[in-house]
Image 1 (tube, rainbow, N blue to C red):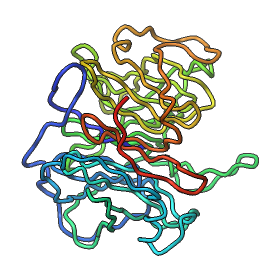
Image 2 (cartoon, rainbow, N blue to C red):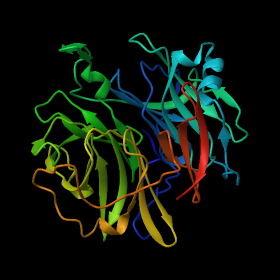
Image 3 (spheres, rainbow, N blue to C red):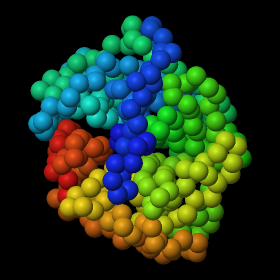
Length: 367
């Protein structure tokens, strides 16, 4: 669920890249980091890893010390879940890779992992080095900063019919760094439960929240409780936007200027990409002088969207039978993709299922 989401100085076209701030990490303290869960993850400036701890309703920024130039080669690690399990001293069926993020400077890959699959699962962070070797990320004595999220859902299991759920696990559904702010999507315990929180980096000031509402064409209704599943930043015309995807699968625009503390913002639904589907990850990239949005999802393959459609897209505000709005192309040869991130200008990094029990980590040429 994770890409390296960044916003700052505009490079070209609609792509948005991070502003470099030499003092961005000032104020971090050295010490032990304690996590109750790990994932989603993303990168901030100067190789700082942002870790969402949904169970604790907190975000932790960890200094990795990786600020060197990226090596000019691709990466493939077969059976990555089996190798992670071996590193953690367990079997592959007892771990979950919750998210991955590529350090845009070093190209080292970080994995947010759960050891175990129940409420007692233990979090871990694993680094995949440029040569494909794995190592644990030590949290014993590192520079870090921590931000607690206000108004998080209560940590309790509720039963509806035959299903059990815990809203606290969705207190953070995605995370990204944008021009000095860490944006956090998820749920709150408020009436408008779907929330975007912003945290000034590196967490010196209070967490501020914006409630977000969308029109969901597949349901034919406005929704305030469904959380954003994944988001990216993108500049439409001269205006920075947040492009957010929801379950079933609305694609929605939010102007960043509207996401002010305490506001209740209604996004512009620009696509219904098919119901009975869950978006997993998105990236924005450039190829042949054009911008594209690439979305991994649970049921409809990898979607490639020509970003030039976004500026003129009409607002969806009536019930939709299946699909409407901006069009997409399915990348047929990208099968079994579970997670997606930008690797470099020519490649995406994917976590893909290679068999019933095995996953591979692989850099693929951008389509």
